[in-house]
Each structure stands twice: as structure tokens, then as C-alpha cells.
Image 1 (cartoon, helix red, strand yellow):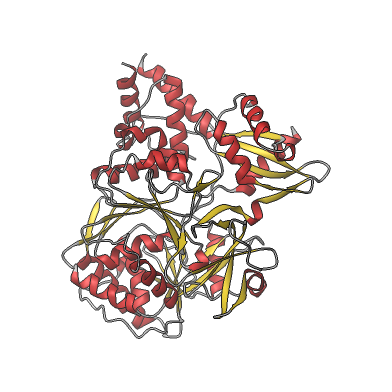
Image 2 (cartoon, rainbow over the protein chains, first blue to last red; image 1 turned 30 degrees about the horizontal axis):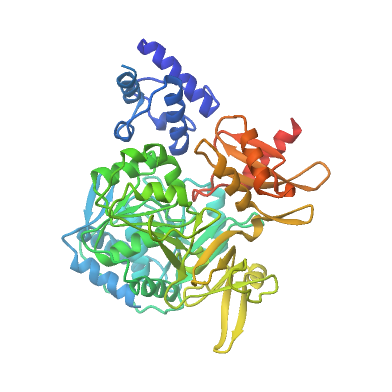
Length: 80
Length: 501
């Protein structure tokens, strides 16, 4: 799966949970940059991404996930 | 005030120790003492002695915590407002309490029409912890909760109320904080649970670990537990629902105490969580804001103390100097094992809602016994007392609904639904009004839709027909109040839109 493909799927998960498309996801994007991305929606986004990619994140990775780049790294590590 | 004297001596005694860990920075008790001294010096020089209620913007920084202690040492009360709340609501709170002065550590203060104390910009390094003489009936804080009339409802707590809380917790041999303890403080300072998570560690010389406002709360808590090796956790049970998928990765043998409060603790999740804390004692605390945070607890243990009603862990027994009374609609005591409204009496009871005589006349009453007369607060919580003397939570007075004339406890409907539910998710039973104006039961399930026939089939075997939910609504994310409790009024609107469809 290419990084672009992963990003598209991540974006779809964000749209599904946040119910809006008013955001751009770059490597540096954090919760501060996206409307509605906060503690509770973050948990739901993570759960949605786990379902979409059929993976299970490690709590250790989630604990240190600060931006989209970290998220993509964890997904790549899980699907490989 | 003994607890004020103890605060002073603890801050002095532990001057070399860390008091706070805020945003990845440690602050010592000396740092804390300097901030307290700067703020109280400013108050002494710029705020009239007669001005007792001071607004406090609750930022996550040392100055905000120092402000609370500074105000207490000056014999004043804090009226906290959350900077993330609508500004109109916060101003409404200041109007109700006639606050003139606001302590605000923000870079750009928002409340410029008030006399602002910019706590982060004050100068000085001298320490002065000599507190003023404090009248025990003076207020220590006023917290606001949402009111049924749409206006925030103020709950004032006196220094004597707080003194009694500290006295009761100190009398409990099972719970003793030490200077070496590292304690979680995850609550907004506008939520009463925060009082125990900063006050008790400060009295013991422990270190307090806060959650930055922008952090993903649930993972940050784990990060603190894991990296900082926290020893004392105080949480609302809803946190566990979010961490639950990852319980198998959590092993925290360093946690000594884990206290829950502010919501129902379910036995299944408590058992799973206790496996993550092999050396931790779990306390299920009970207590409303009106009774100064805690009124009693049940010492949960996955093997020996698992008493529960409808899957909700018992709330145990009242603490020192607190009396529990379970009454019927006429404020008369009900027999053992009978459900009624739990009422509380003792020195931790609030003097009454702030300028709200109507609410005070219905929420408080005097009850005569052989020993005299006590003033009780009606909690709105339905409980029963069992033959061991333990109290068990059954539901809310206002969550008891009548369907076709029959009484239905919503907690019971939820319990049966959850028992059969394959997916671990939140379920809320709620009363909704149909097109004919009659009450019906709805079942709200958090998450994506799925076939619920198997749950309904099971529930039909457990409950009378009138107790069966008539509507099922899947909601991606349950609406929560600022304190993390599920907002049932907002939840109800989902069923309205469902009915329209």
C-alpha cells in the first residue's frame, strides 16, 4: 500500500468521524489544526483506522503519536 | 483551620521536593510557595478585605494552583471558570456571584471589564505563608453546575466543609498519601473532583501530575502512568471505557491507590482494570458537589469485595461524621433492602445553593431522630442499604420513568442490554415522548449500527413488556458534559430526529 493510499484512507476515516471535510492532512498536522479533533474523537478515529486497515495499534505507539506522520508510521509498521 | 495550617507546614517541610509536573516541567514546593506569595501580596495590596469571592480562570499552570492557596491564605474563596466554556456563561457566573476581581494567568486576559490579577506577570521571590485568621463559615470556593432552569447553579463550600472532608479522609486507615507519591490530577478545576486531587497531595507533600489542555487525555494519562510511574490515580469511570481495548498492554505495579467517583463503576470493567494494577487498592467513592466531594466509599477488590447492584459496584458506607438516610417520597426512612432516595447529613453539607431559595427549599430538609435534628441534602440518587450496612446505587430519581403507569429503572434496562451485548460499547436507556405525548423507552447505543435482534430477544426473557425499549438509536459518539458525564438531554434529541425520519 502506497503512502498516498494510506493517506486517502486516513482522510476518509477522519471525515467519517468528524463529519466534515474542512481540513488538510499533512505530515505535520496535529489535533490543533483540525476542527473537532480532540480527546474523544481521537479515540474514535483510532478505532476507525484500526477497522479500515484491519490492524491493532500498540498503546505505546498511540501514547507517542503527535501528528499525521506518526500515525502513518504506525500504520505502515502494523500492516507490514 | 487545621487543614490550612497543615498546608502551610507541608509546603515548608517539602520545599526541596517536586509539587507539580505540568506540561513536562517539574515545579518544586519552593517554586509553588513563591507563586503563592506573589499572588497573595498582590491581593493584600490591591483587593479590598471585604471582597471575598475572586474569579479564577482555570489554566493548566502553576499560577492557577497557587492562586487557590493564595486566596485561602487570604481568607477568600475562588470562583473558577473554564476558559474553554462560552464567555457568556462565565460572565453569567461572575454576575451571579458579584465577582469584581479575576485572577487570570492567560497571556491575553479575556475578562478585561473586571479587575484582572495577571498572575504570571507578578514579581518577587520572597516567601510568605503566614495565613490570615479564617472564619470557618467563610467560603473556600463556589462551583457551578448546570441547572434545570438553564441558569448555572452555584454550590458554595465553606472552610469548615473542607476541614471536615480532610478530617474524614485522614480518619480512613486504608488511604494514606506519602511524600513519595506521584498523583494524577486529570480534572478541570471547575469540577469538584479536582479538589481532592490537588488538596490531598499538597497536604502530604506528594507530586501532582496534570493533563495539558490540548493533550489527547486518555493516552496522556497512560503516558503519565507508564513513564512517570504514577502511584495514585483518581479518575471517572468513563476513562476506563476508552482505555479498555488496550488493557492487555497496561501493567502498573507501582500504582498504590486508584479512586473512582463521579459516575457508576461497572463490575465487569472494574475487574478487568484491577488486573492492570496488581498492587493497587481500588476505592469506589461516592459524593455530590453539595457534600464537599466525597461522602463515603466502597473498597473494591476483584476477589473479596465485589458487591454490586445491576452490575454497578456498591458505594459502601458513609465516612466519619457523615450520616446516610434513605427516604421515600415523604422524606420518611425506608426499611433495609428497599430502594429510596439517598440523603446526606453532616459537617460537609453545603450551606445551600447560591441565591436560590426555591431550589434550597426542595433539596434540603430537617430530619428528627432521638438524638436531635439533622439537616439533610437530597441527592436525587436512588439507593438501598443492605443487611451488611453497605449502600448500593440503583439509579437516579429523575431517571426513574413511568411507562404506561409502571415504574421503570433505566439502569435495569441498560444492565440487561449490556449483559447480552457482544460488542463492548456504551448503552443508555432513555425515556422519550411519542407523537401522542406518552413516554416510551429508547435505547441509545454508541457506535456503528448492527442487528440488535439477539439483544431484544434476550431482554424479552428478562423484563416485563413495558420495560422493553421501543426505539433503538445508534449514535457515533455520545454527547458528554464538560465533566465527562453523558448528556442525556442531548442524547434525547437524537431520538427526536429519528422519529421525524
